[in-house]
Length: 241
Image (cartoon, rainbow, N blue to C red; front, top):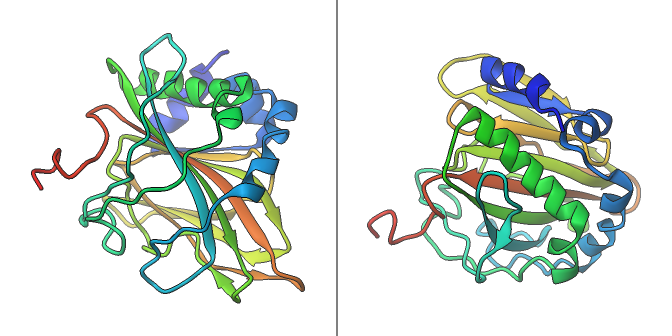
């Protein structure tokens, strides 16, 4: 697994967009094995915390810790929490989601994906351990419009973020936008290929994805979002709350 080709572009622009083929080559991924995990997105419970009144998002959430040179290890199930400074819409409250299914988080392809990204990010920022949060999302258009990022353009309050497309079916829209957090430059693109991924330095860029609409029948957009943080999991006590 040679991560060297990713380090320079990541350092120069704060993000890297990888096709599935490039991700497989750089991170040593087994795409066929990852494809076998896609059925788990059919079993995501509805997100009961949406403050915009919508019913378009389903998700699961689990946490891991990874030391350099080791595989990520699951930790006891915990709430997802963000401060309002990073998520004005849903920040400031503990959100308890059902965990990622054990058959998924225990799969070799999953461990390789999460672990290899941790190794890459450790080359960019040496750490004692990563505190990793994994979010499986499904955004659907049953109600008309689905919003992948209802909080708008944002940072996540972590060190690195990976947005990985698992599937996209019968939708239009869903344009991903990445902007310099300290300037005006930015890029726009639409992720369409399963297992393509956007990797970001959360301190350097702001990101969002535009709403999706169905094409004919109701559609859906499935993603896996992984966040890596060196300073522990975000939690109310860590923020002094």
